Image (cartoon, rainbow, N blue to C red):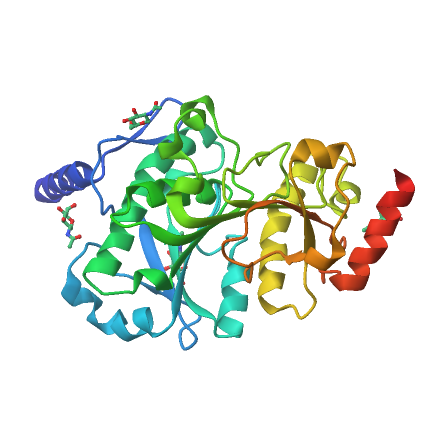
Length: 339
Ligand SMILES: *[C@@H]1O[C@H](CO)[C@@H](O)[C@H](O)[C@H]1NC(C)=O
Ligand SMILES: *[C@@H]1O[C@H](CO)[C@@H](O)[C@H](O)[C@H]1NC(C)=O
Ligand SMILES: *[C@@H]1O[C@H](CO)[C@@H](O)[C@H](O)[C@H]1NC(C)=O
Ligand SMILES: *[C@@H]1O[C@H](CO)[C@@H](O)[C@H](O)[C@H]1NC(C)=O
């Protein structure tokens, strides 16, 4: 018995040294900002066409352990998915994106799980921890690129909510700039991160940073800080969300999560999500932007990489969300009539 206790103490000491996490008085996990990566509470999972259920990567960064993953990792594009606050790798709303990517064989998907560092009820701690989570993601991506030889140009990081801010932190810390980060309704910054670009997503974090913002007034932010932001149905809620509940928190959550459904649909939809350029939100708000129907752009996974600015468009209130060209014209006429 004594020996078992001793072993347990030794084990937890060893574990604590690599992953110091303390549980604070609110019962929330807090990671020391100086802590090392890799960590046992941040895991990586690979999903491929032949293994849709996923396999966990070995913990640690021993290159030999990765030999059996080699061909999957370099055979096609690698989308790195990062779930949001209060989610995990299995129940994340981002999983529909993974399913669609695998369905059309666009990419293999690598998901990061950091659920025990961002549990529901611990938002402030989750935001604090996101700095370390992002740094560990950067380390893992560097490992894949430099040791496993995953081509840097194959890597596309997609983060939802707090996951989008974590993508930004990772983009800041990787050795060589990432090609593309997509932020899906990046979460609201706290004072903690608001004034420091290191800890949130911005255009310096990748060669191309595209954002879709579906809940800019509540859980999300107005200016995602990327090269490009799409604002589908710009307003305080997404269509179909207002009716769903009388509770404003649920309406916001519905609008926030909607972004993952729109993005997933954009991967497989033959009907495009059209949007038009408006110089600024202020111009849009004061009806000073007239859609140029000859220069409509497509929102989503197949965005024209390099495109910059703020783009606006509308969607249906339920799936299928995309309205195509005629839907775009109809909604344009409707909003012109109502203004
Ligand atoms: C593996 O992790 C250790 C400990 O954090 C680190 O010092 C080392 O540089 C990493 N090696 C690789 C190949 O990334
Ligand atoms: C996710 O599912 C896998 C099995 O597919 C399981 O091993 C893992 O523990 C789950 N992770 C979480 C955080 O629930
Ligand atoms: C942002 O945080 C980093 C790391 O803690 C620090 O080195 C840097 O000075 C901060 N920048 C600003 C503008 O506060
Ligand atoms: C939402 O409410 C409007 C107006 O009351 C109604 O026309 C529409 O069908 C409702 N939508 C849903 C999804 O319930």
